[in-house]
Length: 231
Image (cartoon, rainbow, N blue to C red; front, top):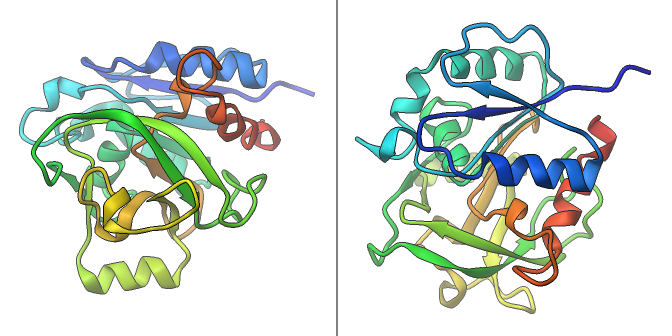
């Protein structure tokens, strides 16, 4: 059986593309291909990941300029065909800016860059990205962002809640979802969402930085293991 192809889109300012490559290689035993931002045609791919970083220096607003890149048109094209798309941190910002995910990522409520480990509660474990998690499972992943404050209007918030599009929420060790455990001011502690079709997901925490026990723990491994059935 032909091995499926995983692609990582790189922009000027991306800085987690190599981390993603290593995580995918280690956790899934596959070597992804890199796609440069000005690539106007991707012949084929079975999964696309958009890494963290500061695409185009985060000028204007994080992820905005990246949406004008030819490669994002290809991401949108493949998403419409049902290809799994994952955006992490800056990748999440890009997916909201190009309209594949609802809402927006704005400046952290305390206006500071946040770099720390956080706990996440798995809200929806029935997507292709999360089906190996237990319902309400608690995982720990690092964050590193200054524009990670997820905002969405109340009417649209209800829609994504009704459609089970909320995937992760910031929480305590015991799954308490309260303002105390919200690192950036995100509406309802939201840390990750999907589109309505559930083939596009965005999250602010970095699973690719949590695959070695001596650093940020190994909860990121399970995130990538969830993807195994997709390749």
